[in-house]
Length: 163
Image (cartoon, rainbow, N blue to C red; front, side, top):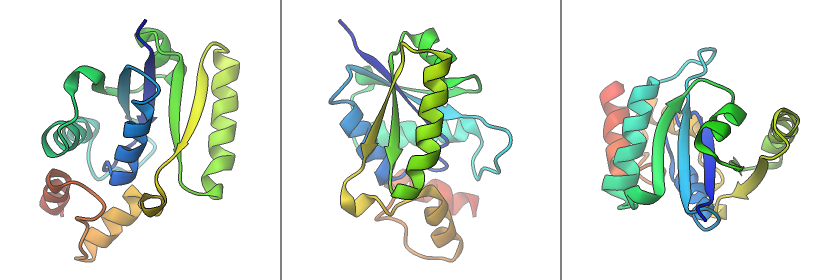
C-alpha cells in the first residue's frame, strides 16, 4: 500500500532546512507531494511556477533525489482539499523553534476540524539547519552575503539572478 503525504509551504526559496524535512518525511511515506502555496496575500521573491522549478532543480539535479518518490506542484486550495485530491492522509510541517509551534498547532487543529482522517506530523530539521529560514536567506543575499551553506547551487544562482 502506498502511503502518500503532503508537505505544503511557500518555499520562497527552498532551503536545506526544507530539504531535511523532505528527507525525514520520505522515511514515513512512499510518495511525498511538495506543495507550493500560491497565497496571494504574501509578497514573494519568486512566483509559484519559479518556486516549483527551483525545488525541482534543487531536489532532482543538485541533490539527486528520485523523481518517482516526490512530486512538486503549485496549489491554491485548502491543504485538506489537496490531501483529498491526492489521497494523502498525512500533512508534514517543519518546526524550527518554539515560536513556530503555536501557529502550527492552530493550523493542525483547524485542518483536523476540516477533515479528521488527515493527521499532521511535525518534523524538526537537524540542529544545524534549524536556524535557516527563507526570509534570512533572502536578506543575506540582498546584503551580498554568502548563502551557499543554506541553499543548493541552482537556488543560489536563481536568487542572485533575481537580485
